[in-house]
Each structure stands twice: as structure tokens, then as C-alpha cells.
Length: 305
Ligand SMILES: Cc1cc2nc3c(=O)[nH]c(=O)nc-3n(C[C@H](O)[C@H](O)[C@H](O)COP(=O)(O)OP(=O)(O)OC[C@H]3O[C@@H](n4cnc5c(N)ncnc54)[C@H](O)[C@@H]3O)c2cc1C
Image 1 (cartoon, rainbow, N blue to C red):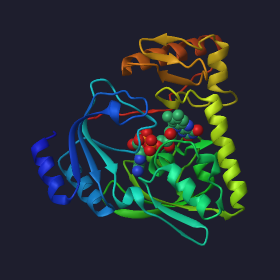
Image 2: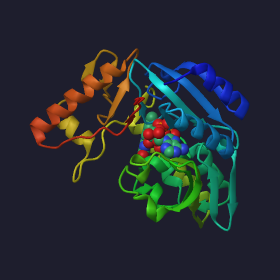
Image 3: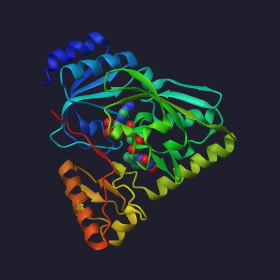
């Protein structure tokens, strides 16, 4: 049960910022979603640990969010507490002997630019993927034959008992858009990446090339959560959707992008219900016509009491 006054008093004493009823449409790249009952921004690992402990003890539904680039939130909103990593967790990046360690709230973009500055290669694939390092580890984000699992060395997590511990990448069950975090209520606090020294001009050229390819192919002018469906084994979701004649299919403000059939976009005023209606129709049609079962890629945030 969420007692907002008690939670506010606790957060203020602990040094965390709390905001109430912030619309998720302002916190997600899809620009969809009702109010977040409590949005708590923690400035460091210790405060995160305290806030997490309080939420658990008081049985307040909670979830950690990154930059909302892979999140879908119902129009009714989220009746729990969303934890966001701020302060040093969103700023600190350091390098030693080819290993970059950063807070999980750091943006992937800043991580990639830091690697470029230090002439380190291996993260070019991630340049252009929106979101935070924590979200990228959670999703094992990837593009253009690269994915987080190829460069991740270890993470520091806050586990379900409120303890901070280091876990090696091999133990995270990183597979295509999957990690152990999907089954565990853990918060990634920081991550270390093992990279190779390379030629700075070549690293920069590769980053710019991949970003250019994104701009050419993806409907970046519309809000979305990127690819709406995971790649089914042996095929591509966008190809199947296109072959089923669903390019441009729309319900309310949600539409299968005309530019890239793998993206459902918010062409203006889309609700969660619109997006779900488009996705359901796409899944049913693709299954009926091709036999492939498409799985949603974005995470749906719901507060389970
Ligand atoms: C235009 C566009 C293009 C995209 N292109 C790609 C692409 O090429 N490849 C790709 O893989 N993805 C892509 N995405 C999807 C998205 O950017 C990635 O999945 C990204 O890694 C999500 O990070 P986030 O910080 O925004 O996470 P959020 O969307 O905020 O959260 C996603 C999930 O991660 C969890 N999470 C977030 N932070 C933490 C943490 N610190 N600890 C534990 N769990 C956490 C959340 O609870 C949630 O379940 C794209 C999205 C857009 C909008």
C-alpha cells in the first residue's frame, strides 16, 4: 500500500528526490502512459539501497526505469514507485587499461563517446541506441552484429535482499534481448566493459556510419520504443509484417511505420490501448499467414500489488 506522505518524508530524509503523478508520457520515448504515482531519483548507490529497503519493507510495488526507450505503460499509469538512477549513477565514467566502468544511469551515447575519446573499440554498435547502460544490460541491447554481451565484463547489482554485489557477465544469462534481470528483482548499479585499443578515426567513422544507417531506415521523427517485436528465430519481424501487408496499419494514434514495418510509432495522441490493438492485430495476422509467433520487445510496466 502506497502512503505517499510517509514515502515522501522517507525520501527527503534519505536524500532522494521524489515527484508524484509524473505522466509516463514524459518519461518514455513512446510518449505514452498515465501518471507514475511516485518517481524517485536516487543520487548514489547507498541512497538507492535505503530507498529499495524501504519500498520492500512497506510492500510498495516498485521498478527501476532507465530512459524509458523500451517501456510501454498503461494509460491508467503506474500505481507504484519508479526508481531512476541520478547523480553519480548517471554521470560517473572511468577508464583503466581498456576497461570502462560507469554508473548504470549513464546514457549509452555518453558511454560510446567516452570510449571514442579513449580510442577504445567494441561499443560502436551501441551508438544510436537510446537509453541507459542499465537498460541496455537488462535488454542485452544490440544492433548491427554487436550486443552488450560481447563487451560486458561485470556488473554491480543491488540484489533482492538489499545487498550490493558484483556479478560476472557470464553469470547473467545474456542471450538475444534477454538477461537474468528479467527473472530477478535486481537493480544494475554500474557496469564494466572490456574493450580493445583501436584507431580513433576508424572508431568514429564506424559510429557515424551506423548512426547514418539508422537515420536512413528508422522513423526517428516519430515517438516509438524502437523495434516493437523481437526477431523470431530464422526470420525478421519487419519482413514478416511487410509480407502480410501490414505496413501503415493503424488504430487511433498508433501505426505500423510506413518507413520501417518493424516499428510501431505514435503518430500523434496514441494511447497504450491503441498500441496494444495494433500489436495484437499484427501478431494475429502474422501467425495466421506465416505461422511465426511474434513476441513484444518493449517491457510493459505494471505495478503488481
Ligand atoms: C528509436 C529507437 C531505436 C532503438 N534501437 C534499438 C537497437 O538498435 N537495439 C536495441 O537493443 N534496442 C533498441 N531500442 C530499444 C531501447 O533503446 C533499448 O532496449 C535500451 O537498452 C533501453 O534502455 P532504457 O534505459 O531506455 O531502459 P527502459 O526503457 O527505461 O527500461 C527497459 C527495461 O530495463 C529495466 N532497467 C532499466 N534500467 C535498469 C537498471 N539499472 N537495472 C535493472 N533493470 C533496469 C527496466 O526495469 C525495464 O524493464 C531502440 C529504441 C528506440 C526508441
